[in-house]
Length: 358
Image 1 (spheres, rainbow, N blue to C red):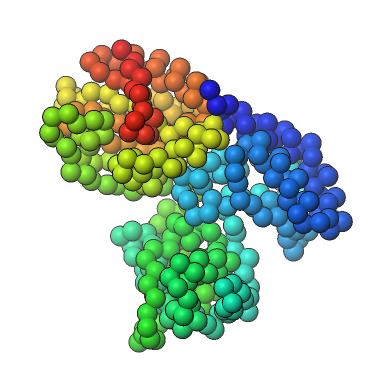
Image 2: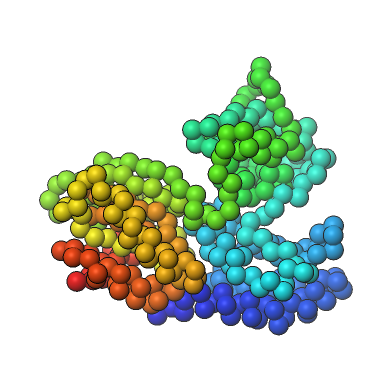
């Protein structure tokens, strides 16, 4: 079995703590960039099969190690766990980030694809979408519109990350539309966009993003009530902090599951029969079981809940699991205390073999 992510992270921080003085010396002495990055990458590979990162020294003289999920929510959850477990003693000299922080200043430019853009090359029209807790933007930019679509959005997102930060771009920037001409509405510069988001969060009481496993969205599905349905096909409603994972599952795909597993992380869910539970109590009943499991897992870095779902036959509790063996021992001990006719565990892949608890 793959070594658990919990162990990998522990080993990484132990190794980094032993080697960080050497990394600082290399940065101070302006060592060859490739040599430095390869050295740090070799340490990061203790925790991550593959990782994208940046390094630098900020204006205050603190060293910085910046990991990036490349815009992927499931990947961000692993990086947040990594960040949460950074040893206290390292923060005196280091800043660690699980996403790229904003660092652009007025006048900053970006050059890619033989195109150079500055603030004056983007006219941005923000619109607050309070229903989704997002700021949608329309953009007028002849320079970006001249690029093919893939390059246009790549360049835009990199520029947004500079001024808004990768986390804000992922979580608070909603729809993005390019327009063919200027609009008769209020516009802002890209350097002003983060303050627009901050103001919307404050005025509308949006949840401040801290832990990606704790920011949920609800969903509804048309259940399959035909004979021969499989797990989760009976779901009609639920909530999740990782919609991309659910989308993969229902498409019969598993790229995020497979990538996480390479790092020792397992995405999975507990299921139990709910037909004998009064309909009005189904959600609260599931919540009580979830509370019991997370009370014995979250404080010890074993797992986090990703949400849950209700089906016409089963209820489901979803998890990101950092130590699979420890999680299964806890989950089974709790679940066997209930008198369900059918209950068990499954990985977040449609081809997974279920593990029954009774």
